[in-house]
Image 1 (cartoon, rainbow, N blue to C red):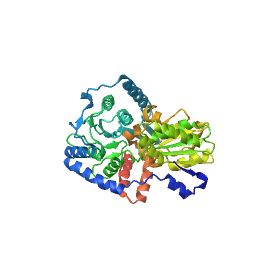
Image 2 (cartoon, helix red, strand yellow; image 1 turned 60 degrees about the vertical axis):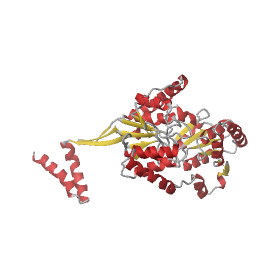
Image 3 (cartoon, one colour; image 1 turned 30 degrees about the horizontal axis):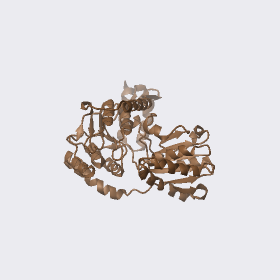
Image 4 (tube, rainbow, N blue to C red; image 1 turned 45 degrees about the vertical axis):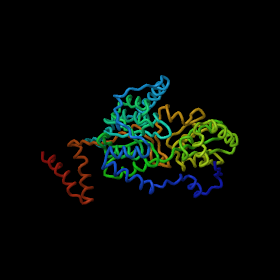
Length: 430
């Protein structure tokens, strides 16, 4: 890990350090755009072609209905899934909004109601790891929001199938279909719709740069589809002081590093933190990880910053805006008010990021690449849209009408003014 001293960094240096590795979106867009166009024109045929080209498999069928599938899952795994499912459901159920109703002035009633996005596509990555946790993180809030159609897309395995664990979760979600495809072709299929893949109104879920590029391009296309957020490689930032256990810190850094060689791993610590012990723990623990080559590459591309105080640590963290923020310092909960920009926060020595990744109840589909400055992670609200309503009584229009007439006249929109005046005259002549 590269090491910096905060006191030696200018503001420009801090901005440079906070920058993520540049993604060559121009090149990626150039590769993804033809895939999107092919899927639009050729449908399932193109999806199968690119799945064969990139994954070496042509799944048959391309789309399956979870409720018609039989699964065999080890009891311990099923119990773990059920426990995580229940915790995630409990936390997200509490997020369901209530109708907002306000009488802004006598006779003028305003409401804000929510309705589910009817058709959603959930992208669950595969590739180097099967991710049933992501299926739960996306599917449970969609189910609770009341989405009428839930489509799950996930890359098939080498046998052209999808893991029983994913199917089991899809059954619990009452999902309509599973698309056995990944990459840009899966995103495009859900955006445009094909003979076997229903069209989605919104696509959510993490993925590699090709998936992200496809979501970004399709959001601005004639497909009329929304996305959850832009996303880059996964990230963690750990804040540590002299009370932090070096072994815990090392484990937290490595747990994120094993996601991928491009994962962003950052340690921000005070001088009294045991830097040497932590580096030793990283080397020792890294050797025991099955994905040690991937994690090792990520660690080499990562950095640490020595700060003079915890105030400086949180100042830097807010500028970096990490996807995951882990706080391992004295009285960690007392620093919550300092957190402005972060996707999800893990407070204290007994709160590893893994808890949120799997089963504590919070969502792990989070903004990366610095987007925590302006985006939130996936929640029930990600699957809802708001509609405002208003109802005016005669008294309400008499009270508010002159204000509307004045403002409409100011903007020289006589039609707007007339729509009010004609009603006020009717009331006056009654």
